[in-house]
Amino acid sequence: MSFLQRSRTAKTLAYETYSLGTHTKVTVHCAGVIEFSPLQPVQEFGQVKPTNPTRIKSIIYSCGVHGNETAPIEICDALVTDILNETVIVKHRVMIQFANLLAMDIGQRFVSENMNRLFSGMHSHSADDSIEAPRAALLEQLTFDFFARGPVGAKRYHYDLHTAIRAAKYPRFVVYPYLDGRSYDKEQISWLAGAGIQAILLSESPTTTYSYYSAHVCQAHAFTVELGKVQPFGQNDMNDFTLARDFLFNLVISEDYVAPDAPMPVLFRIKQAIMRNHKNFKLHFSDDTPNFTAFAKGTVLASEFDDTQQEFIEYTAQIDNEAIVFPNADVALGQRALLTLEAIEPTDIPID
Image 1 (cartoon, rainbow, N blue to C red):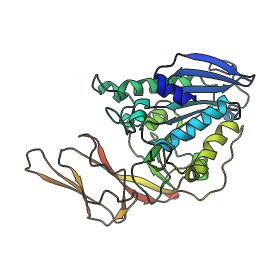
Image 2: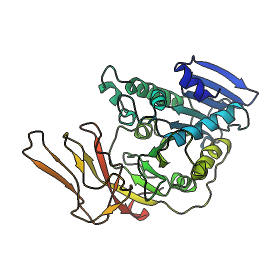
Image 3: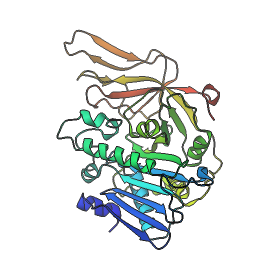
Image 4: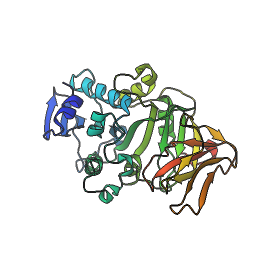
């Protein structure tokens, strides 16, 4: 039985540590969260600073924040199984998190509420009976502790792996969280390109997503990574995920990872975040409209009446070729129902 199967069956697993041969320390933190680190040398925070800390990585792969986004779950399950079977030997500290086990069991995006709106402390504002809130709080703490225990000077990485609800002009894309004034990382962009990423969305304000928590609080290179379209377990064509799978595996087994050459992803900045504020919110395009579909300036994208039916509110494209992404008219009131995007050039942003 795989670690993921044990986690989904038991729902609670006791904390334990053990070794794989003389090469890997294994730490089971709880159901769905497992950590691997090379035994030689074991360098935790506070010990002698490594001679070349930039070569040492602390890596987190999270998946299943939405329980029906199965391809990343299957990729991470295969990686954990290969490490435990000793067919893959890690060269860096890596924690793998299967986030929303209960949502996986019912094949739904979430049970009580969208987990990816509950980070950076937002879990504390949820209802007492929320399924996702205590899990988000636990994942936050495990992430913070994992990075804090890392070797002094080690680079930090967090790839929060997803698949999108609908088709897309660019099926493989990432959201680059707001960096609080820091420059975008040239190496990370090249790594993502080598992993098959076709487009990058640059967030320009704080959010409550998991990747923003890691970028802001833990100062990690962190991304929300969309690898394709939602499918049920066992129905993914894994050939569609070859580049992403190779990246995720090779990063943890290579002392010095070098990305394959690949075209620069298309860059977008977020133009509008359109919120659903009233019950009768609706989108003005069909449900099968792909992500990254562009609209002419002035096109009505969404509308709603206020609760008194007195004021009609329209949300329109503000520029030509304004693209849409993540449309969902059924989100909870007060949550984002749609992002719109503006294409930009690499010269428009600071990249170091």
